[in-house]
Image (cartoon, rainbow, N blue to C red; front, top):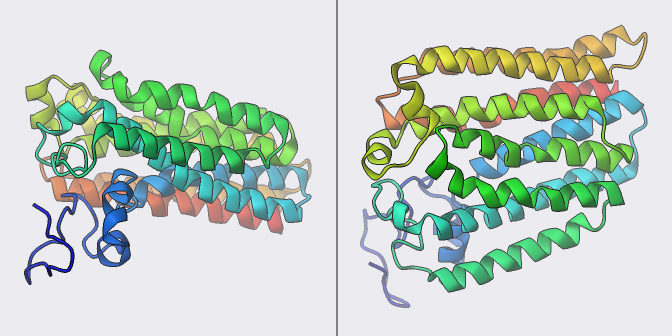
Length: 326
């Protein structure tokens, strides 16, 4: 239930329209104009972790490309900033598309029924218009990159469009999420170098393994509801064997990111190679810590660990950037 203009919310209650799994005290609920809040919530602006998880592979690709070429340019600053803005916009557009297609499912799940469409804050038609606005602004940013990166950016729409339907036909929808969320590793590498390279492909596949890791943890929040309404996920597929699978995804993530570093490493520059390879190892240790903390029966623990993957991915960014700039 929402309050009318000028009517204060009762003390001690959550802001009107707040989504159940949003970060308490987030900037949308505190600072955004009331009329914009339902649309910002639809874009998950009140839950920034998704933007980080979309952005970090972009920064991996850019930093590793600079590491290989050894020639940072002023334009790389724009690539980094453009990727950040694009990640915010395309994550918002993707979430809007997801909520349009999943509105009937979301209404049946306790954690998601407070989202803007099932709760009645935004109509499906208005949501579609909002999706188009975000996508068009993101396209404007993409068009400032080179042609090869533009083509890759447009191609990214394919896995984005398919992902919301994946949970209906496969137990592995997280693979489709990984295909979409890690595309930035290919795009940012290409934006710097002008062409796609095998190191970027290794980063991309490693990022997919990482997505399988963190989104399986995330999916354990909804296993009971998902089972009742017929939605598939790796969390339901793995069940009690989830820790075994998470360990496999962790090893694959570290190995593939490390392979990307080796493939990109300039000949004879051992110090820079050692620094860069530290990124996947540091990330791997963070993932080990997550597995030690994991309790799949506790939704709050699952959400906390899922969000902690921002820090895991940032570790790799920092090591790659350090190796690129040494």
